[in-house]
Image 1 (cartoon, each protein chain N blue to C red):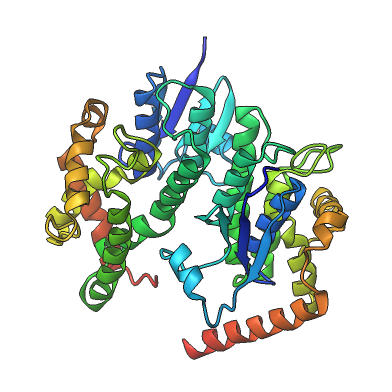
Image 2: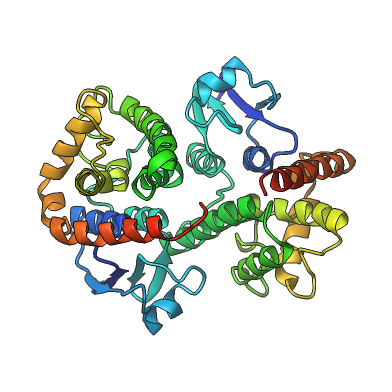
Length: 223
Length: 217
C-alpha cells in the first residue's frame, strides 16, 4: 500500500496546488499541517536544504519544491494527467507555471504588500504579467484546454486570493472588462468540485493576509 | 535524426543558460544552427519568439519557440530520446529537478552576493553528489550536470577577479571533480566561451554591478 504524506500550511498557494494535484488524481494522502513559526523536527529533517513546505513524502521518499512535486506526482500516478502528451505543449505548460512563480505571483504580491507610490509603480508590472497570461487562455476554457492541468493548478491561487486582496486593499487587478478571459477562468476554475471543496475559509484568509500586509507596511523593509 | 528537422538556438556567447541548451543538444547529437544575439540591441526575432521575457536562450524547433533553459532541457529530453538527461525513476527525476532548480535560483543570486554565501550554496550542492558516482547523473552526464557545471568555469573566473576560491577542492571535493569532468569532456568543452574574453567580460560586468550599487546608496 502506498503511503503519501503532505506537509503543508493551510493557506499557502504552493501547498494548495499539491492538494489539487493529489485530489484530481484520486490519491489517498495524509496532511500534516506545519506552523512556520515553529517548524517541526520532522520537516527540518525532510527538507534540510530549504526548510520549507510543501514537502511530499511517498513511501519514505522525500520530494520538495512544489513544481518538482507536481512533476513527481505526474510521473508516478498516471491517471488524470496534468500535462499534455505533446512535448511542445508540455514545454508551454511548464513555461507558464514557471512564469507564475517567477513573475506573476511576485508582481501581484508586490501590489498587495505596498502602498502609495510603491504600489502605484507595482500595479502596471502586475497588469502586464496578467495580460501575458490572458493571451494563453484564448480559445480555451482552462489553461489545460477542456480540463484543468498544471498551469491551472499553479495559477489557481489567484482564483481565491484575488478576492481576499480586493477585500483588504480595495484594488481589483483582474477587472472583467480588462481581462475577460481570466475573469471567466477564475469562475470556471472555482466551480470545479475538487477545487471548490478545498478552498481555505475566506474569512480566515482575510484575517491572515490582512495581518501580513500590516506587517509589511509597518516595517521598514527594503524590497 | 529525422531529415528536414530545423533546430535553431538563439543565445549569447557568455550565457550559462544558452550553454546548457547547446550542451543538451550536443550530448544527444542533435544538429542545430546557433544564432548569436546582441543583447544590447535585441533582434526583432528574439522579441517575437520570447515576448514575455525577451531573453535568450530560445530554442526554435520546426518554427516553434521554447524559452527558459530548464524548460528547454526538458523539451529536448522528451523530443530526442537518445542519451537521456533525466533518469527514469520518478524519485531520481525529482531529485534532479530539485538540484537544477536550486542551481538556477542560487546562480542568479551568487552573481551579486558575497562569496561566503556562494560557498555555502556550493557546499549544499555538494551534498547532491554520491561518493563513487562521478556525476549528478550517476555514471554519465545528466540534467543537473548540464545545469550546474558552468559554476566550475564561473567559479574560476570569479576567483581570479576577487581572489576567493569558490569551488574549493578541499571543501567540495566531489563537486570540484564533477565540474572538471564535465568541462573537460571534449564535446562540451568546445562550446565554452574563450577564457580570456570571458574574464574581461566578467570584470566589466562586476564593475557595472559595483557602480550600480554605489549609485543607489
